Image (cartoon, rainbow, N blue to C red):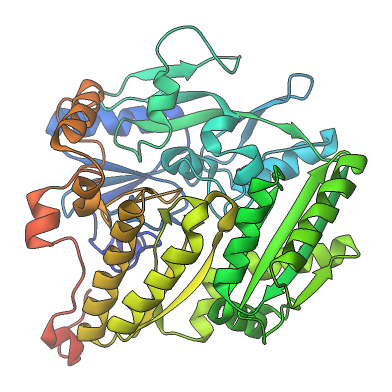
Length: 465
């Protein structure tokens, strides 16, 4: 694809604050297509950017002006199902939720479930090591992949991993998962499937403040209860969700917890009673228990629609993705509120409370350049706040172009140099998804990757073609 209109669709991913139109886009349909494209790029010294569904939120699929985007979105086939060994081989463009749909006739499913699972691709999940609401109990993508077929930056087709969870030798599969397309392009994935739980129970607990909800989360974990999911929404997020989905959340609540327990019926019953009691002990103002699968689905529809629902209360928003120790949830939420007040901006919080993976949404008006600048600064401050509290810059969205400049707040120069040596071992010429993860002068100095409308464009005298 080379036409200007078609290329425009590939100038950014879900982080729309970063935009750059690529030189061309390859719509691959097979491993061989990807290998051919990579070899041609290598022959001419052209950088390339692997891309799945384009739902990433850290600018991981942001192209350079002279780079080639290699899209795997058309590679959506199930290549093999081995129900007896609970494995499925899929192409990377398959939607996350489609894997579970294909496994359903066998009573199996794929556990990682990002909120964007209806559209995000399994290949993107591998690139970002995505998690989702149920990662508290079941882990991230890296815990559910046996092997991948990869086109290396030199165009070689290799297989990483094996048919068992812990193959002999260096864990190159572990190195590759979460490498954000900097070590190669995944073209086939052997995923691990789980047996669907026998019993599932879900509740929504309301609290007057987010701090009380955070205390309830700490109480759950300290009592040894590991629910399948513990999600938190603050008052602003609840309001947006209810307006968009009518999922039944209480608009009067200062915060809400969605708690889900699954497993064998007897254990589920006992753990659910403990969870309910701990919520009441931590001053829950109301508890609603899903009585039917339809009601449970509606609760999750509200939670998983939260990002999209923000469009009803703000013209634009930035999604941050930091991790903190869950025992410090209340402190960090208070500090985020203080930072938002200082920046005169609103922040909605909806996140995976059980594992301390925050997703603050910084709301702003993208037509106001000064407010946009403040929003970007606040988003960066929140990410680095997580590091200051002993956490991480990313839980599941990756570093991409968005947080590359913050990496020195978390890692020493020696740490970063070691990571770069690993990257060079896979990609000696730096052609695979450059300017991601590691701070570079272009990103951190000139900041040329970010899209800023020219004054003539703003005035309507010129267009972007």
